[in-house]
Image 1 (cartoon, helix red, strand yellow):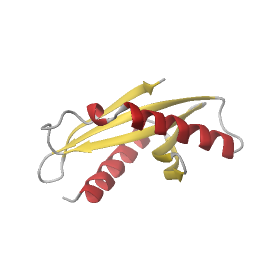
Image 2 (image 1 turned 135 degrees about the vertical axis):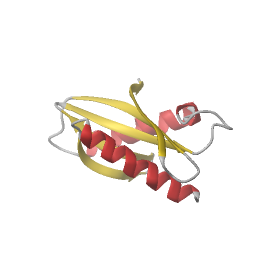
Image 3 (image 1 turned 45 degrees about the vertical axis):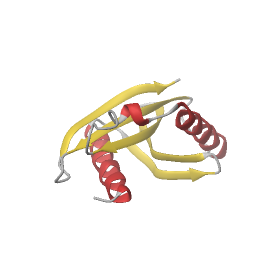
Image 4 (image 1 turned 120 degrees about the horizontal axis):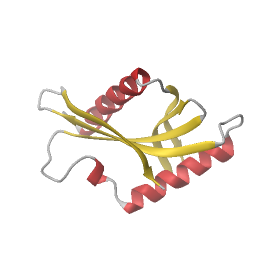
Length: 119
């Protein structure tokens, strides 16, 4: 599976996972000058910016370990850009990660939501 296909598969699984947990997906793949946010969702009165990390092997660490401090900074900057460019948003917001691990056939072996992953 190519890198883009892997990421797309992980984001689809993450979106379905979030919907089952009661999240409303507002937008996917929000791009701005600062970076990209994979999923922007809402849970009750909280806006949630979600970074999805998908891996098929733990050779280079877990999905959540692959998020560098530089990437975290870009996610925060992108979230602030979104907040400043959209109206009628909830006051509270947070940044979560979803770790997705797939087997060699593309079947999910792990889906984990990590709330408040960046503060």
